[in-house]
Amino acid sequence: MEINKDRFHNLYVFAGGIEEAPARDAPGILHNTIGNSANDQIAAQQVNRLVYVDPGVYYIGSYIWEIPSDTRVYLAPGAVLMGGLAIRQARNVHIFGRGVVYQGHLDPHYYADGLTIDHATDVSIALHDCHGRQ
Image (tube, rainbow, N blue to C red; front, side, top):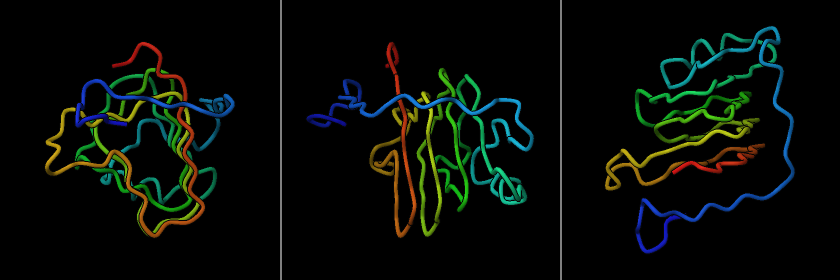
């Protein structure tokens, strides 16, 4: 949460229990398949549609990733998505893990929202533990 339009000294609020990470090497998991250009590859995955974002910094090519329906996105500890996430006219989307979604590098006049949910159903978001991140 930004306070007094200060983008660099934000208030972070974390609540809820810690959930277990999915098995990294389970069959069918897509690793670091992010951004709108990857949505066809994600949609081709018929079962266990899970995008596992490994530790590291990843730039979303279009700045805003429109996550498709029936997709789970796990952000591993140390994963940083540079850009925003949008869930528009989608269903059954679950974003979870201990990673970070960061938009500080974008112009606030054009990209104001880190997360947009618009006409979507069955959406859950559970991101935990950003100790030491700025």
